[in-house]
Amino acid sequence: PAAGGYRPAACAGADPLMVVANQKTARNEVMALFYAAWQANPTSLPVPLFWDNVDTDPPPAPAATDKAEAAPWVRAQMRHNVGGQVTLADDQGRRRWRRSGIIIVEVYTPRNTGFDRLHDELIQIVKDAFEGKSTPSEVIFSDVSPREIGPDGPWFQSNVLVAFEYDEIK
Image 1 (cartoon, rainbow, N blue to C red):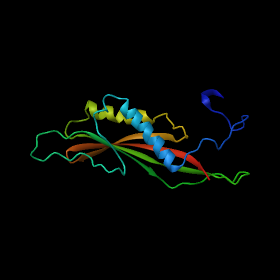
Image 2 (image 1 turned 180 degrees about the horizontal axis):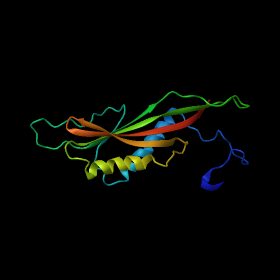
Image 3 (image 1 turned 90 degrees about the horizontal axis):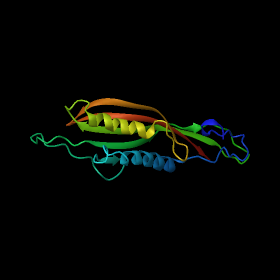
């Protein structure tokens, strides 16, 4: 292989269609990559992590009369955008379809605590999970961008947006 692990398709024995994802594989690999990063950090371990379209609800907000601080929590979601065909058919009739979208990781920390250590560390864990990474099926990530959204009940919400892209062969 050439520098950086890149192997041009013209290399002997290379199959340019070998490593590709489908929607299910892409979602599973993306969320597994994020979960591994989340589990590997002692700061994020006690913070509940919620998944999109799973039968669990985020923690309820404390009652207005309750002096307890709202507990931090995080929700991860993956949304596909419009995709399309990017190659003509090969000699076997297979075409490459480009899929892209955005991963949204919502980070909720207690409101009125400023951008405290916990808030910033959780945002950094999410960024580190995706920046410069790809999955085994070549889902690639770009444009990892934290966005401060603002107050949401007893929490302050920030989102980390991550663009992703992969190819599917049909």
